[in-house]
Amino acid sequence: MAETNWKSKAQKLKKRLKVLKKRVAEDAVAVAAATALAAPVKPKAAKPVSPLAPKDGFPALPRIAGVEFAAVGAGIKYQNRKDVMLIRLAPGTAMAGVFTRSSTRSGCVRDGQEKLALPVPKGAGAAIIVNSGNSNAFTGKVGDKAVAAVCGSVAKALDIPASRVFSSSTGVIGEPLPFEKITAKVPELVADLREDAIEMAAQAMMTTDTFPKGAAATVQGDGGEIRIAGIAKGSGMIAPDMATMLVYIFTDAKISAANLQKMLSRNVDDTFNSITVDSDTSTSDTLLLAATGQSPAAEVKATGPIAKAFEAALRGVMHDLALQVIRDGEGATKLVEVRVTGAASPEDAAKVSFSIANSPLVKTAVAGQDPNWGRIVAAVGKSGAQADRDRLTIRFGDILVAQKGWRHPEYKEEDGATYMLQPELVIAVDLGLGRAARSVWTCDLTNRYVEINADYRS
Image (cartoon, rainbow, N blue to C red; front, side, top):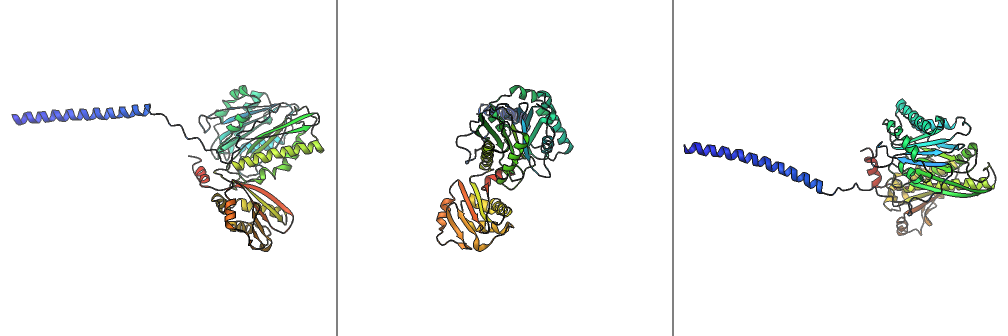
């Protein structure tokens, strides 16, 4: 009898213990949940801004009469940020542009090229719509449909011909663009258009960029002031091929589309086609230049002092924006000018300058602040350009490093190492064979570049 009572008590204790264990587990879950709710939410770490970014931030750009901007968040890839921007251009605006020549260029690029070649309806306005997060490139007929839908939606909302709506997309390649997210936001974009939102527009088209890019210039025309303002995006996949990123430049000048195009085309090689981050050309590179004609100044003709001043100012804005892209090169800590002189031909000058600027060995030496001039010699030799060892001269800034086929006897390694500590460098090479020259701007190649591009789609 006693044994039976003991077994009964033991079974009751086991049942009670099982119940207590279950309650303890439930309480532990509840405590963990309460702790998680009470704990402060850690904000996502902000993207570090390039150390080469302009110290004063985005510049105060002048308003361009006849140009309005708006930007919204459509959630194409990025959450809680603006990723679509719209630009409205006044009736009578003249347009010019240059585009990537990539054989796999996006539907937006092909569409823009075709539209620029079309006759312009008299007095027609124009518009530019840009999204980030998805490049709509290598998406076939689906991509073409997306371009048509987005441009058609903007044309209808602004009451302008669809042939005057230019679109750009930047981001991941090969994924269909969720264009319905963009078209759904067109009414909001149109309602928000205003002249003073250019910085917001620059921010909306950023991808791996760490800062928005803007530049401006003013020219005294015949009878009034002419203003120029531009914005750009670009950080990686940057190499010369008829513009290298997305760039939109605006002016209130009165000028024909033909003269505008000539000036743009003349200056693209020494600006946007003279920069390289990683030797990779994007499928989406686009540069559009718009002139609203609303300045009080007289028309800018093809030649003359006013035309010369206007073109110089335009070139200055283009050069400024191009260098900002290099300053924001993915992971960049150094801005490097590769200055080649004494080449036998302009083609050879370009070959040598880009061979040096794109060399991973040169770029990693710069990142490591190592004055390894032997890598420069190697880059010259592999370029395919005419070169003579005994006529070659190499300088770091004003420091004479090598001459007449050998290291200069007065060159000291510590001088080169000290020079390499600077954030902005000049690598100068004189080939001693002719009078042709070319300058190219690049940046160093750091671990951060690998991290950004290894994680870009994740």
